[in-house]
Image (tube, rainbow, N blue to C red; front, side):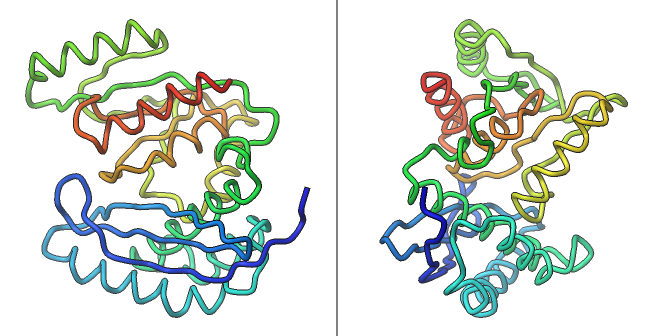
Length: 252
């Protein structure tokens, strides 16, 4: 197993998410030519989306690129420490934490591709057991359309570890981490493992991104969470997560 692969470039760009809103895509390039990309949407009011998008892209293409180019792609913990120091914690604001999360995820995806192993295995190692249970979160204010109900039922038949809930809720005995909340991959994995070790109850990951990127699914499998909470299996930005679960199931 190689111990060192140099990061040769880091690039952020503006894209559109499944709602047609501004979103961020980050690419990380390895010395062997491997390019991994991750896209994330922004949890901010529409009035501030354009401004925040441009600020994140500028941060990625200047400060973060200068910091990571030449570093070891395979040193995820070290790179995430650099990103966390740059971000200054959750109190530093959404621009820095959003940029750190996107780059951290892109580093992991590039590294897994460079090593030729699945992303969930790169993040979780050989102890990965299987896919977590799926919670399909429905809006509280209205019933899903008939076609959506049919698709949900088909998924439940195919994947028995599925429950359906109305509205986002969190029980006293469980913890849910939203995809927009963690700063780096390493910090998220450590928080999940600490919660599980202490036996505090169930823990899950909730998809709040609106891009066609299924990184959250690989992260959930790698961390061994109890459940992953997804929107219904309609629209491309949602169905890509279900498709990724199906592929991982086949591999495992």
